[in-house]
Length: 224
Image 1 (cartoon, rainbow, N blue to C red):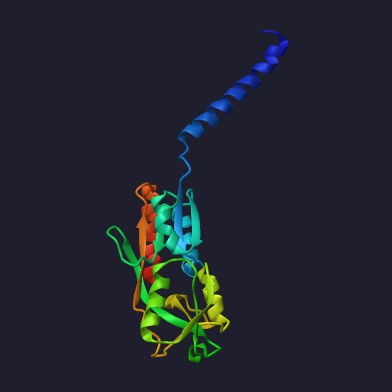
Image 2 (spheres, rainbow, N blue to C red):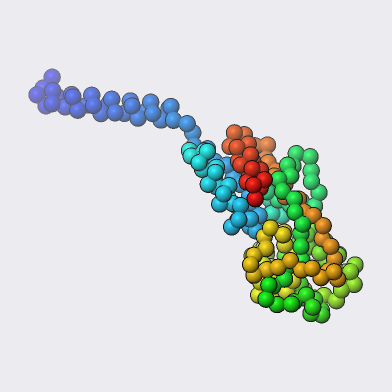
């Protein structure tokens, strides 16, 4: 070996050792896991922060993707493999769905305006074809009330903004009312009954993470 080779040899040994260690670490490292959650946007600023904080504390190495939007999209997203687990309010609870929360749906109005006394009654609804929209319209027609749809929105936040501004009345889950929105006690308004929030999962979901997230969601709603 030349003098230059002798100088290079210990450096080469160190480099090879470092590479061997990196390969061993990579082979032994657990694969990154991700779970994809769908949650209705009306719960995005209430229960979602608690769910995320608890999940991250219990599964610090896992990643969580959250789709916070209209829940009518979630059954299709689950079937298409776009989500692993989702909270939504179906018209009918199916086998395999887990009810995590039940509450009254209420007619809501501005806390600062008596919109419910106006005729025709101004109403804010979703502009998407969903069973809640059709149910509200059917109940209004059967009640005999003179009403007019004055605002439609793709999102709950849009409907809630119209209600809070005193533009219209609308239907919301009771737990999503704010200090600017009150439940209406007008007996002329048709009764809406109870709504169920269910947890549905995809058969292709990463089982450990999906089960852990489902348990956290159930506990969160039990404590809310």
